[in-house]
Length: 306
Image (cartoon, rainbow, N blue to C red; front, top):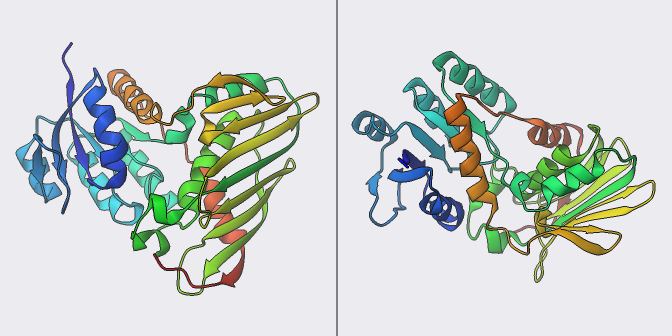
């Protein structure tokens, strides 16, 4: 089976931890080039300039962008204008409007655009969605608490405008919520905690319609918490480990104790979209983040430094 050449742009922690192993293990893809100011992958042609890559490697039809959201639009637009299929790490952009623009450009060029949400590929998300399909939801709560120092060590961009702060991990929870609920919800109130020396929130308390609430915090040391709990008319569902383990009434019923299946599933999905000449651009998780930043009451908390 012939593998399709793909370029990976932005060789940082998430690329090395998740994207590179997923591509190398895939029967669909060959990692043919990387583009990064500093990072490289051994044995793979490395560029430091994206325009040079586009000019010198017309044989690579697919680009996967792993860089932070703020500088990403220019790269995404250049890739699409060059006729390359495009895969976007979450969140797909810094603003909703720019992703709408990319979607229109992809359609005009006849190429695939895939706005990925890796947490939707967690092992237990599909079983949870199927179980909830015919259920009446009484209430739901998300607890998404982790340590920014562990997952983004020294990465100040997450606290700069466009970096999203605690919504960088929180949007993973929202991507699961918008996937599994049988009916959509909308935000009604939000409280956002901003360190006095930072531009994005480090914690958030959210309330949605349908008796849905969320607690996001980026200051939790020790064990990390990525849970979604949902009460129906008769039973209690819990998704643990970021959507990878499913419990019904306290009993494990589906999933695996690993997050390593998420990115391989994303790349399998991208291969299918390219084969079908289709796109997948669901912005519903990003809409909730935008609504939180619009509605949110801002509270100032202690300074935060890495």
